[in-house]
Image (cartoon, rainbow, N blue to C red; front, side):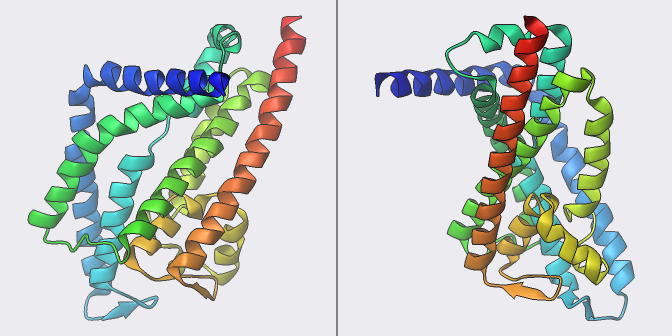
Length: 272
């Protein structure tokens, strides 16, 4: 019990230190206040032109589409992750050894680093952009169910972390994982639903998304926000969608743990 309490205190300290460290560079975060609304404005003009005189496209109305992109932009601020880049850098420079000798393993350290970093992002990125979307663009940013949306975003937060950390672990074999990271960012941008709702994809590709991690990072929490989830001909209630998301996160965690243990064996073998 004392050991768990000690590790919890360490993790809280990591989150606090990360928050204070990045507070010194809060202007970097505030740049996103411009990026987010500009991206949203571009999407607004594009989809307004695409809809034209049509009231529905793919079963989605224009106001729903605008709310969807507002939600994905805000969710992106909350779940942003750099665990893959950070872990790759530590392995490449040999600094991972110092973390290997600490009382908590690096994954817990990286998770609480992310919590501290995104706490700052919540204040300097999420809240300002939320106000801009509401008061300047006039978008209704009220979630269909606040508790379920919060839970879905938390699950997306964890999913993004575990997936990125798994990519970072490939550095124990490849040393330089930038290629995999870049490829993942490209594929994730397309198949997470951040650029275009997955409803517009071919049916077979929509079905494929149930077995990949991407939709659970952006599309699903955005659809939970809007209050309606459907993909590949399957319609789920908000509760069912969040339940499926939780199962996906649990499976991803299991896969991440397997890769982590293999990576630690690789690390020990190389270091011996």
